[in-house]
Length: 449
Image (cartoon, rainbow, N blue to C red; front, side, top):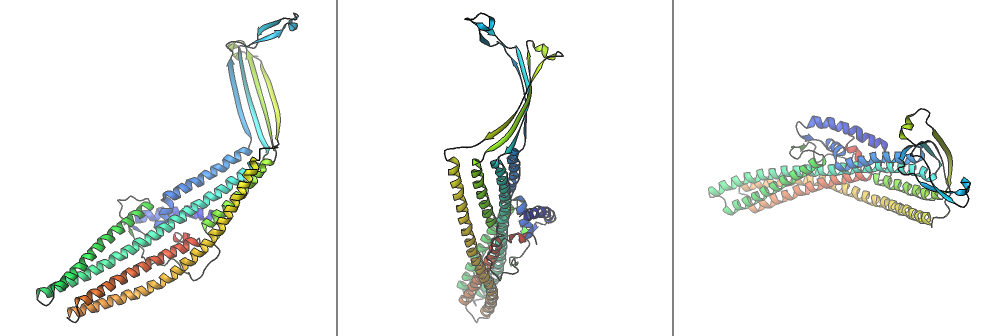
């Protein structure tokens, strides 16, 4: 886990170098995008702050076990000396009390006190709990990094699929414009029908609308990418990798152990935290022992200027105190808290088992989706090639007068359907790959390659 965090720190430096190299032309690879997201995304930055705070929390709890030293001083001007009654017997006149003012006009004191915990099991366990909280903060940082990597990867391939869709539509427009020009010429020469030209223009108008919508969608996706990478919205960028990049080198096996999955690690750490909480509550039944001491001096003067005379009297005082506290009865407060902590542990254990089972199901579904869409990509690539071939043949026959415009438009619709099916299968395949990497804890390979 610490190695992963260290890798993120090192790779963030690599990201800065790669960013400096690429900002000149605005091109970004998948690795560069995920590196920048891990470094700059707001969720990761806040998780990094929480991780830093947890380190200071350890120091805070450890302070309860360290010596405490305090320095105190005071200077008091008794504007009116207090009056007390003195029995007359003290003065040889029994039966009568005499009121007398006692004390000095000025009194001062200075002292230093030291205290040290000798035994406090609750304070010791508080340090262990703080350390475990730091581990959880590290895992939360790792989780935030993996989540943003998966989000960026999905968006990257979605944008590249959209860019591929734009190219296909532009190809469709080029073919349709060519067919429009041919049909227009035949109509002008009296060899074609106006309705055929109208049909071509209708299809061409639909393609123009599709292209406009696709460009707008791609721009929105790139704007979102710039937001995730913390780039200025006015900065132009383009993605350099192809939509058909292979992420999984070997996806022919199923796994049943998800111990490397960050959510599993978090729940396991939470279980350990629950156990520590139970121990901490039970330790409240144990006695606590501490040692304290103080050394001080008191000065009493009738005139303030006398403080500065040599030989002024200061009266010392000191003590050493051994403090023992034994809890006897707290109204069953700790007992109730202990039961709550035990139930929290059981709840976390149930959630951990359920999460493992859920990951097993999700992983199997993701593998099935990946294998199915991988096959579909190959099948749809071949289907797309055949659709293009059929369209070209129909186009040639139409120009030769051997086929009708209806047949040509039908083949053109089949071509558009084949393109859409191919792009859908391609993105679904990429999405399944990212899901598999997220579930088996290997999503980090996207920024380690």
